[in-house]
Every structure is written in C-alpha cells, then in structure tokens.
Length: 394
Image (tube, rainbow, N blue to C red; front, side, top):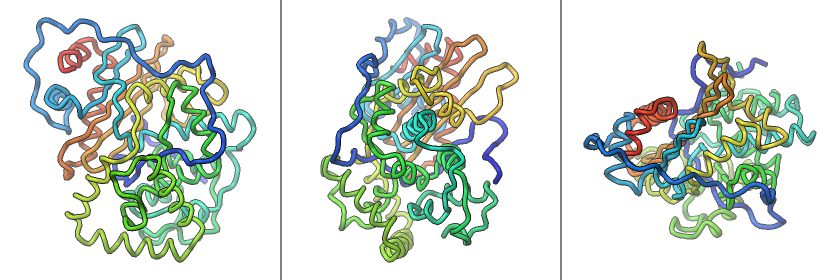
C-alpha cells in the first residue's frame, strides 16, 4: 500500500472538517503529567516597540490581516511565536479557544508513545470497514482524499467499495495528520483509550485536556435533539457526544440514518453554515500555550519515548534546501481557523508558532484562512521584523 507523501510543505487539511474536541469521557483514573512537567506557559512579552505603525486592516485570509484582527478584536486571537533562540512573543497565550483539528497532535503523540512501548505496531492491519465505522461524510472530503491517496476504490463520498480491504495502522495515522481524517482520529482514540491521550498531552504540559470526539460532535450537529444544548457545560456534552459516536460505530442502522439526516440538513447550505458557526463556537478548547508546549515536546524529543515516532508523522517531508524540516497541522470550522507550525533547523534550534482565531465571516474560504495564518507564523518564527509587528498588534 503506498505511503502518504506530498511535495513541498507538510500536507494539512484545509477543509471545513465538522470536528469538535469534547470533554474526556468519564470513568477510570486519568493519566497525569509527570511531576517534572510544568503546566504549559510562555514568558511575558518584551516591551512594545516605540515605532509601531498603525494596525493593518483585519482580514482572516492574509498574514497582515491577522495582525489587524489581533489589534481590532483581541479576544478572538490566541498566539505564540517562539523562534527557539530566545525570542518569544505572544498574545493571549493562555486563553481557551476552539482548536479544531489542531488537537490531533495529541493523538499523534499518544500513538508514538504506544508504539515505542510496544502496545501498538505501525504495521498492524486495520480493516477499512472498521475505520469507516467512524466515518460520517461531513469532513469536506478528507476521508475520501485519504482513500484516493492509498489507491482504494470508493463509492463517491460513501467510502471504500471493499470494506474488507486492509491498511496499516501507520497509514491510518498518516491519513489523520496529512488529510485531517476525522474517522482516523476517532478510531485511534478508541484503540488507545482516553487515558493514553490525556497522559500524552500532559507530558507536554497540557493539563485539563478537552479530548476530541470528532464523530460525536458531528452527530450532535446532525442529530441535535439527541445532544445536550450548546450552552451545556462540556462535562455534560462530552459524554453524550462520545456515546453517540460509539453507537454510530456499532449500530449500522444508526449509521445509515445519520447519513440520511446529514444529507437532508445540508440541502439548505446557508442555514446549515450559520448553524455550524454557532455550533463551532461551543466546541472544545485549548490554548496557544498548550499547543505550543506539546509541539515543542514532541519535536524536540523532551516528550520522551515515542517522540521520534510522532515527529516522523508530523514531519513527512524531506528537509528543505536550507536544511530545515518544517511541520504544520491546522484545523477549521466555519468562522474559526487554527494553525500550528514547527521549524527544526540544522543548528538544533526549533521554532514553534501557534495561531488560534475565531469570529470571521462563516463563508470565508478556509483554505485562504489557513494560508494567511501559516504565512504569519513562518514570517514571525523566522524574522525579527515580523515578530516586532506581532508585538505591536499584541
């Protein structure tokens, strides 16, 4: 079976994945961070430059426009830029913001640790039908894109023609990272168990993780009468959404009914988009500092056993001509965009950037949002002039 590899920058999903991280499922002891791992944080900003230019116009599709959003609506942005050489600037680094598919770095880290400790094998065979038991076609083509990359024939958006075909567990993880396949993330959560994911996040300083159930969140949008209201706390919504996902995975009639309901709701695309924006604002959150901490732990190796396995999944591309190895993982909902970046340099330094944003028009092209966020992070991680502009906006 072919591996996922694309030329240029690390592949990410730039689609409207109707994904939401949800609260950890109840029951059992939750893995805790080692005592030596402090909670994620970033240092205070240096003094603001005296010669700051006026803030640019707000625009979620450009790098400069994100500076404008930060200045104009500061509650809608969480940002950390750490060049890995002593320069760190941030804006609301501890603010809890919707994180969308950027949360999948947690799954990658937990997978890496499980492989290193011998509890999972990358070459383990996974039946495609078992993978697709977690698949609802509300991911803007992420899953079918992964099938195409693997050379697996499919029936339109419905999934593989042959559910008995197999792929390796590593290929499922690659689909999750490079195509943002939500079904892959849910399968991996089910395979690993919640304690492993929460423990992996904590090893990077990310405490109190809102653990994603991507399918459960999608079902709560498609079957709202079965889910708690959006105003309910995550301690209520999380278990309910997880239960819906588990029923979907185990009950063929429920799966088929859910797929019919999705098609019916999507017939009025404008109403569905507005409803999705309201739903997205209620989704599970994390902070820019928490994401940055876990990324640095994995890329640097301080995460511990399995960091090399996880890093290989986050960095599928060859080094650039300058020797840098870059990795990205973004995510999006209507009105929400998230992006994380790492830059590993030949001199051993590692730059990290995270940008979490919300509040823009739900019809905004999300691929353009991702490009704008990524450009800002690359510029700021690599250049002092761009970091100064971030500091002016912050």
